[in-house]
Image (cartoon, rainbow, N blue to C red; front, side, top):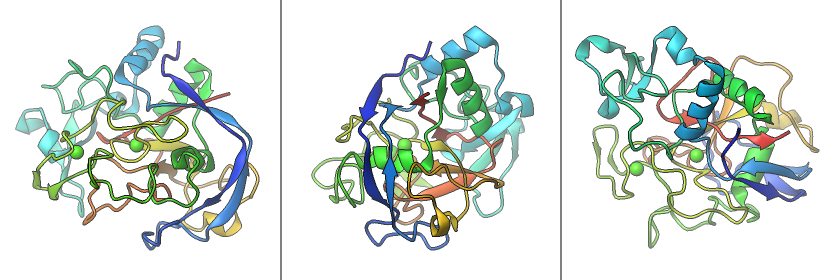
Length: 284
Ligand SMILES: [Ca+2]
Ligand SMILES: [Ca+2]
């Protein structure tokens, strides 16, 4: 049983792509193009640890992080003996490969899900998300559906709530504050994941499309995809090597990852898992 609340997104058209001039060169947020979509029903929140636990209990499914026996954990979130640190990727030394980190041990072997039932499941690969969807009778959103839903009916706004900055008056999303990657002042209240219903939903009823966790989309990633996109119900490139991630995470910061925006794009290989990526689903 898929227990995540769903909301309906009406059919319509929107301008997909960089809407604020803040695009990251190389990510492929342009050209902006007019996309039309049929209506669809999408999860109001990312899939939670409780919902993913129900899937695992029903099926015995083992995630790729469990099969590979490691996953990527942010250095301040590690809860494991030093002997479990397998390495740091060059260029992003704040990530540790941690033996024993997986969806039910998000910091490593010395961590568990106590108190995290309503947090988004993390350390799930694109392939794991597909397996969950197959069990739940769901599918991943296309990248176009994700962006349209995240926009919440506000055309060309930078964020799901409009163009106000993320901290204007109050905190609107779970990102990073302070000196990345060493000191997080946690002005928004959260070092890593937040409960999925933190802050405010957008005009379509979606919570935290930006910030908290990156969300897998169905599409293959290609930075040139928008140059030749279909304009009606696009499903992305026919092939590729990595899958689209959207929305940014608790590690995003204006100085480092300006990707907590509606139009921002990222990607990873379909077997990769990280402590800041999850997914939400769409009805078949
Ligand atoms: Ca935060
Ligand atoms: Ca998100």
